Image 1 (cartoon, rainbow, N blue to C red):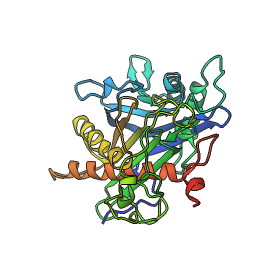
Image 2 (cartoon, rainbow, N blue to C red):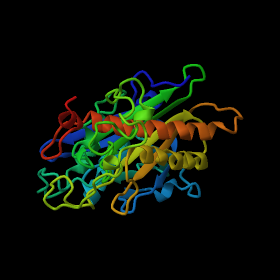
Image 3 (cartoon, rainbow, N blue to C red):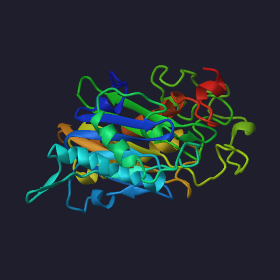
Image 4 (cartoon, one colour):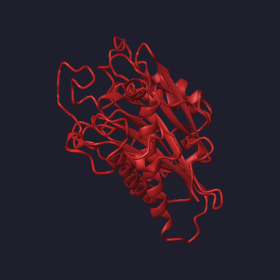
Length: 342
């Protein structure tokens, strides 16, 4: 029977580490998923305003099959430079694709928009390269959620967003699945002005409050039927509908080829749809990477890849709720725990 792993983090997938670096004055940060060995990866981009790096390379038709790390960063397009810091850390250790006597680390990346959250953005050179280097050096099995890494300056509809993670493991078969997400959505992760998360039905234990179903069940009263997405310039949290994007990584220890990993990323996007409403809007750059570390042989079961995709979507939905649940108030963006008294 599948259940949350011992850490309930993406690092319950063997072969992965996560490092975070953030700057509270900047109100931004970087998260790095570091592969202990080169791993098969792909990506699915659904948002209408993505900011990415090396995503074309992850198409199954392209020749580089394995990556060394994935970088998630705040800072909008400025944050794409975070991958430079990750590449430096890897190159110092001789990791990457060897071409002659040169080693080129492969580090796909995606960014979210957190430039309007009140932090000090008056840099001469963007600080993300240094944050990327620092985050990679801090990569470990355990890490904190909420105001950490790429989730430091994030928001989620009317609440403070954050970094979330979750896992599902099968102790009998050895299958492991996990997700990491920086939640910075235009949509809401909760049901209107109620504390219940859209992902409530997938909760394991009390990992995001243990509230159970909303008081009216799945059918909500009219007053809660639609998230308030009013574009109000006076609302400092929602004053520009372009300031969004949720970026994520899902992973498994299964042995999959690049096409199967791309399908894993596609299926995992359903997790965002289960946890955020609305999602994949023209103003969001929603992007989901997928990694297969290849340490678990699925055998010849033709249904297994689809089951892994379903688990990845569930883990991603739970990770979204956990990222918001663990976030702390930052500036005008109030945390779930402050608003709902938990």
